[in-house]
Amino acid sequence: MVTQFWKNILKKISSNPFSKKSHIKLGLYGPPNGGKSTLANRICLDWLGEEMSTVSHIAHETREINIKEQVSIKNKKGRELTFSLVDTPGIATRIDYEEFLKKGMKKTEAKKRAKEATKGVIDAIKWLDNMDSVVVVLDATKDPYSQVNITIIGNLQARNIPVLIAANKVDLKKSSVEAMKAAFPQYEIVGISAKYGKNIEDFYEQLFKLAK
Image (cartoon, helix red, strand yellow):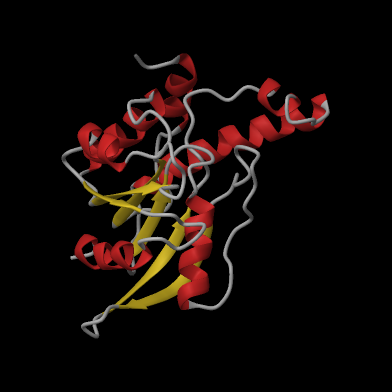
């Protein structure tokens, strides 16, 4: 079922101003707090020696598109892959300023954050049309059949964009990569810990397959 929030989002996406492609763009998508920015930082630290994004335990910390140009990775066979890494705001099917009040924000700040987060969702969906490949970063400790996950996957399937699912937070006991594989059998899934770098080499190897 499509929520009214999501219907309003789709209405606002009438055209995409970012449609011209010049080189490979790899997008990181997923719900809030799944670990997108942590993974973006891991990639940039491993290959550029610097972080990319701000990481926070508060949902919707990333409210604007962040881009790191010319990220080059190499595998053991000597192959090299260069891309623009696009870290996007967390996709949500509902954003309420009250969730920010619970984090200790004042009402004015909470409403501002909710408005910015909603704009971030709109921008993230617009940018889908500009992505060559997408890594969907999901929290492997949570139910993979959530409405937001289905919404994200549905948008990607509609656009025929190559997808790799990163089942993040495998360092936690509640994580289940198998549950992710059962939910999305049509996609390659790699279990990782972006925070600690677990299985990150497997993740990089999958990026080469994704960008074929």
